[in-house]
Image (cartoon, rainbow, N blue to C red; front, side, top):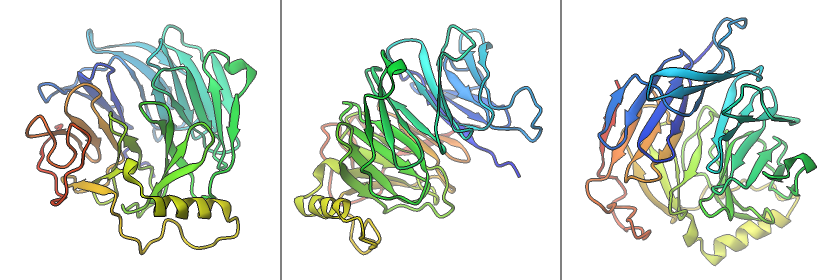
Length: 338
């Protein structure tokens, strides 16, 4: 059985977003005018496996142009579904991760991949904002960090001191300043770790992921908040920079106790760090992204929705990075692609 899956990508200048489904359909939205068209995006997009394993369109990456609505180049190499695409902000390179347990590095100017890394389990990959460091999660509670300019020499550090997690990682990404890494798992658990020594800094579980799907969390552009979709169609926000000393001590104690079988994070604990919840989608949200330039956000579920603040400052997450207390329901206007 093949279920429809979406891949959500945004242009670097924030002017357009593209979503791609396993039915080989693509839709591009103008984030400034909130209009939609069927033109293509000047970025890479992944196609999931089609019912026919012999199809020439399986597991490839396509480079599309918005200007002339044509494929520029196709990249072949993966033998199973592509789960991540990371575009470099430094040059024309990008990286992909796949269920086939391989991470590949590509150059948009040539069809052949320029580097391959094999992992023991399903991998995850992320590039930092400067494009100088990339990380690969090996699927075994292990993270390897590489220098983009010297990746041939292997990782410059390997982090293994993660709390035991019995669920696969489905995504990892650096914070805008590169100091932290956000790990999403195939359950209702998000982790923020220090990108230097791997120490656990925060964990969140107050959202729904009832079917153990790939639900990807992200940092807001300011880096102070974390946003994540859920299986019931809500988008949740946490102010992770406001973690108190008691919670940090609990994390450190949990991290140092190898034999602690108590469920974590504590299920009875209230979540004082949740800032707001946005409602609008009737079904599961897999991806949510902030526009890097304009005051908009985009979510991918059964439909793609553009979220537009009513004024220059958020009612719940303000432009000056300070959360507003009280009402947790966002006053946002939503538009969906046809």
